[in-house]
Image (spheres, rainbow, N blue to C red):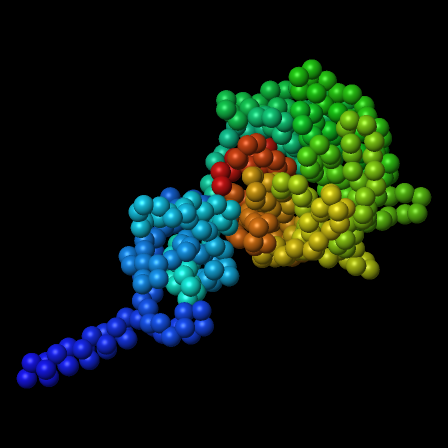
Length: 425
């Protein structure tokens, strides 16, 4: 009888081991082993671009593990072939890590993982959604309602000036202090009617419009303007400007010259040290006007806008990346939603933003889209309160974005804005 009981216990033990273990061929030969057992913690400290993820190795398994961490993706059941963050081994079985560069308002799936000789093993899947940014209205722009103004930031201050209204052009120039939420009028712009600008280091640059090629530098320390080398690409309007490092860039737009009306795709670089313009590789997309441009890190981006197709304008949603080192353009993912033009664009940290603008159906947007260059993904972000608009101006200061002025028009209303908004991602 005792022998029978011992035999049954042995059979039961083998059955249990077979349930809790797996048999692996190859490197482990015919050895029977128990895999690691993991759990995945709920995400915490969730923002629009980051979250804290964690896990626990409850049981290391018979062969232990050589690597642990977390995997995450926007699709279910992520693996180590997706985004993988390894966490160094420590005295505790618990581990966590702060994940950055996430897209806003996006659902992510997460699993803890451990790797041993048999391959990767995963904990249960958890789900979280990043937050939207927040818009806050700030002090109105005191220069008056307008469209097509120029805006950029230098250090911790923002600047808006020039532009126009109904039948009038402006040359006034204003500085915004985000700490005090105060506007201060500065020296009027010294050149002709300007529609384009960017900043490089501690200087701002404005110039060239439909009737001129002059180009000017603003020194906020001296509060004065000095003329620089004329832009050699000819008079133009509705172009795109941004800076990358210590160089400025302008491209696309429209012009009227001796050959008539043309929409452009040329692209130029300005070096403030040598005060020289250099023609670069033409923009690789369709020649366009009224597009959006900004830079993220050491890359530049141009997208949206419209172009002339026979006798009618067509609106675009494509998006392109420029690498100044290779002097080459690469097509990226189109913006989400409807195509648009005369929109606003800026970057905050390692994300880009495009918002407002006009659709081909005459719809004025008040939304903002976020671009993540790491994942090449666009997501919807927080909308501006109130009415949509086009011909607004935008820039970023530190980790916040700013947007103001612009034009709203429909069958019942036609107004210019002088309001000003702050965006916190």
